[in-house]
Image (cartoon, rainbow, N blue to C red; front, side):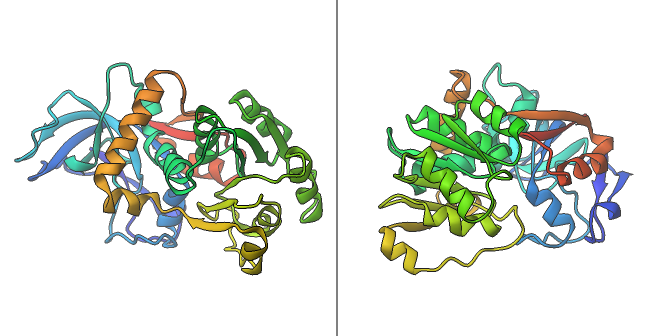
Length: 328
C-alpha cells in the first residue's frame, strides 16, 4: 500500500508519499481499499499540529473516506469482504488502504456513489446535528448560513430546505452565491460587498424583512460572528460550528439577554461518540434522504491521491465550492 505519512506535523510540505506494508485487521477492525477520500478543514489543522486531536507520530491524515472492504478481523459480523462502506475515523484516509474500526464504518446501500460517500458523513452529520438536534429547527423558520458555499454550508442549505425552512446563504463571491441559490437558498448575501459590521447587518435585516434569522449556522467565526448575532431574531439560536475564519470571536453576553437568544455549541464528533444510537438513527435518515434525492454532496473537483499537496493548496485559496475529493 501507499500512504501520505506525517512524521513531523509542521504543515503540508512535511507530508511524504510512502510505500508501507499492507496491514492485517485485528479484532473489531476491517481493511478497506480506499476509493475516495475528502479533504476537510480539520485535515489541514491536524498536519499543522493545531487540531484538538493529536494522533501519535507518525500518522496518515485523511479523516473521511469510502471504499471496499477487503478483509475483516475477529468479531466483525455486520461487514464482509466486497462491501462498500464510508468511514470517518479521523486519520488514515489519504492512502490506498486503511485499517478502520468496524464500528465506525457506515454500510452503503446500493447506488450510493463512493465519491459522494467520501464527502458525506462529516458535513451532513455536522449539519443535521446542528440544525435538527441542537437548534430544533422547525418548518417556516429562517436560517442564515455563513460560509454557505463550503462543505458544511452546502449541506446545511440542503438540510434546512428539506426541513421546510427559509434559507439565506452568505458567501464571499457572486459565483458562490449563485451556487447556493442553485441548491435551494431563497436569498443570498455576498458579504464582500457589504462592509462589516453595519453593511452586513443591513443586508441581513433586508433579507429577513427586518425580523432577523431564527437560526444562524456559523462555521466561520471571526469578524462575522458579532454582526450576525446582533441581527438574530427573538428566541433565536446561534450555532457555533467552527472557526474557518481563523479568529475565535468574543460575543457580548448581554446580547443573549436582549434577544432572548441562545448560543449553542455544535460538536458532532463527541455527539457521535457519546450518543451512538442517536447518531446511527441520524445517519440512516440521511442515507434515506440521499436515496430520495433530497440531499447530495457538492463536489468541487476530484484529484488523484498523489496530488494531495496541490489539493491542500487549492483548499487554502478559499476558492473551493463544496468538497474536494481525492481518488485512487
